[in-house]
Length: 126
Image (cartoon, rainbow, N blue to C red):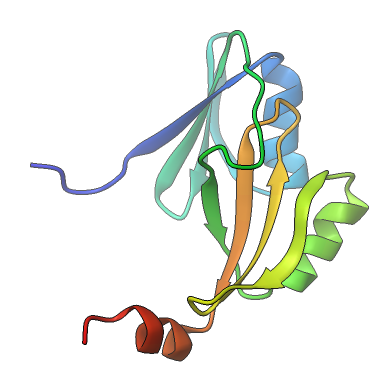
């Protein structure tokens, strides 16, 4: 059956602008780009971008999480690069520190730093 996630694809209004954001603002390695698709490596999972019509995205829209070592540090760097955050860094009950932001097309993304001992204490089956 399913062995792992291969790709997460977002629809974007302007492929060039979005590809620039994922490569130069988020710092992901571009694998390839064509007129109808751009692919980036994110720890072995491909993030794909396809041109098309975007929808209105809201804060409670499902998001993709980027695991980072230090949310506050990455948050500061991305703010300096003009990223718009929906929620500033904050702690969760399940042992993480998170910050929610969007790409230029409103796709919701999240930075996640996990305190693994707390996470397992809260989330592991008893």
